[in-house]
Amino acid sequence: MPLADLVAQNAILPALKVNSKKQAIQELAARAAELTGLPERDVFETLLQRERLGSTGVGAGIAIPHGKLPKFDRLFGLFARLDRPIDFDALDGEPVDLAFLLLAPETAGADHLKALARVARVLRDPATAQKLRASRDATALHAVLTQPLASNAA
Image 1 (spheres, rainbow, N blue to C red):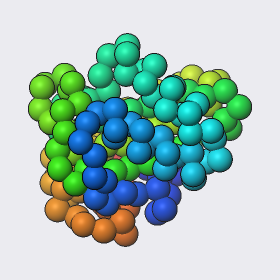
Image 2: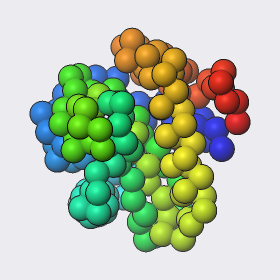
Image 3: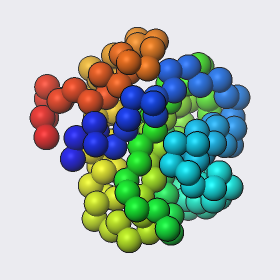
Image 4: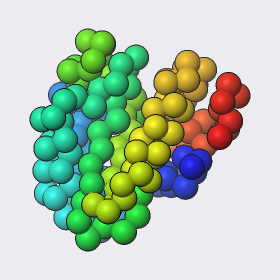
């Protein structure tokens, strides 16, 4: 599943200004709600509930907050490059500056897991992460996210 199918050009936040993990999740939830029509509170609560199970800070400065929502009919992605790194309780203890929000229908099952794996593979590619950190506008970030991986085109 290419990331172009998950994240639209208008779902890119090139310089999200936040000071904490909770604020980051709140801002991501607000933008996702705007773009999907879902109630912001439902998105926020779903993401917080998932974080309580364990941090979605996967390491190397990357977080992939995600959740499944009832009455939602598609996979949806939103990418944010944080203005400055924040503590996200990441597995490696490193601050996070790249976040990819993934929302899925409650019934998504394997599709949700495949999408999560794809996002993780793209963001954890060192060359891709470096380009994302160097890019400053939504168009450039979207282009980096949706290009095929040189090391593992899928």
